Length: 599
Image 1 (cartoon, rainbow, N blue to C red):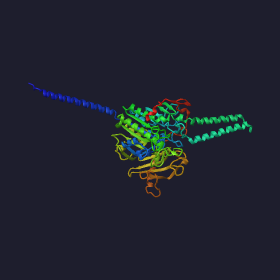
Image 2 (image 1 turned 180 degrees about the horizontal axis):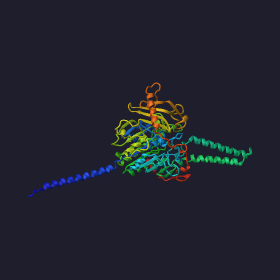
Image 3 (image 1 turned 90 degrees about the vertical axis):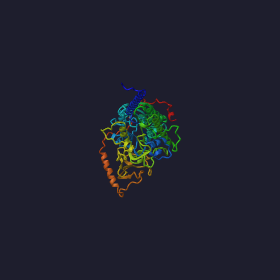
Image 4 (image 1 turned 135 degrees about the vertical axis):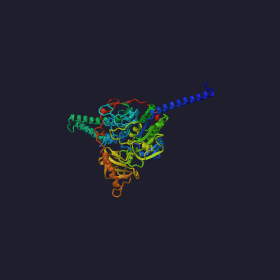
């Protein structure tokens, strides 16, 4: 006879089966969760780029009077870079290097003339289509990509609306903001900035011509001298045509270059500067909300702190540094709003946030005798100065909880160009193999897996001219910088080019040094005491090594069309974006109540 199974034994078996089923369910659930997590492991990237912000303008870099609690907290929660460097001292080439990971000389995004950046929205220069941005690589990896704010890398090439330089042609799914840049003329009644001296000369010539015509009229009708009426007529006609030609270009510049676009559509022409910051904030928060369930790349390119200093009422008069301080504190609030949006969306641990400036603060910009530009701390020089630290050393902050340590500081040389290989690597893409990428992946440095930056040499260009070279001598820890060319400051004794507002790269505006000036930045970050080439025993050896590096670097440079050449940087009416029929360009498709966002 078979064994009898007791009720208690059956009960035990039933419990065991229940547990096995539960365990199987848990394993199935966890395996599904792992698969879901694996499909969403790509991090998000939020890259915050200020405009003309000096490294000395924010608290975590030493400022004790302008309040920047949100940027300071970002630094406290992550890593702060003390030797973060832009690849150029002005907007257009610096941003081109940021987007491509390459010195701007390689893409032609510079000039051998006076124009250091794009001067007109209706110009044909811009970021070439054959350049590969990190946005285009991430886009192919399934990322939603957005740029909100300033672009300043061109729009059209050969025809109206070909949009060859537009953000949507360079890897972005969404664009909202200024295709050009903010400048004084964008604020009606503000200071003159664009070709101000040349415009004054044109005005004077026009006045002289008008006076000459009036003199001819008076002489003719007073019968002092017999003058043919045709002479007066054609003189007057020429004067009117001359005035109309230049005034159409400069008198309506805020219509031509101060516009807001959403993708390819013009939203405001001209822009309403008093509400632009709120519009940028609204678009940023909406982009995060729309894309929070899938990997995204978002670049927020602030207009702050480029002049004019148009600050909302909520921040006006609140800082100890006048309107400039108000503007910085408003930007800090905007940074905090972006960070809060990421955290509140549950994306904190899966989002790398980066904050930097495109170059140093602008020392020479003034309203009368009052400086309204940034402060570069202990560093010499500022915007437009490619060699001096104040023009190229910028804030650099990373936050990524659980991946990047908090409250950490890195004193190694890094570059804005490093963002390119860093985000491409993290986003699962591959670097282009058909070109040189000058940036280096920062993750080994940021995660403390490597004690040193991969940069041994960094080359500091002003336009197409090599002004200085930095050598990171890793064995000794010393950082050397040789200046081959420096701008001539004016007036005498000043640290800036106050006579021409922004320093030039060549000609009578610079001094060529032979032998070069050599500084040990690790001991003399203010570049106050150059080594004596006749006395210091290290001078010759260090300079010889730098010169060899320059020779090796120059062998990698290929000549390409200069996008900022005189012809490419001319205003071309047939390329002018226009909301309407040129020259009657005007529209306002925005919500007038948007100012409440920062109110």
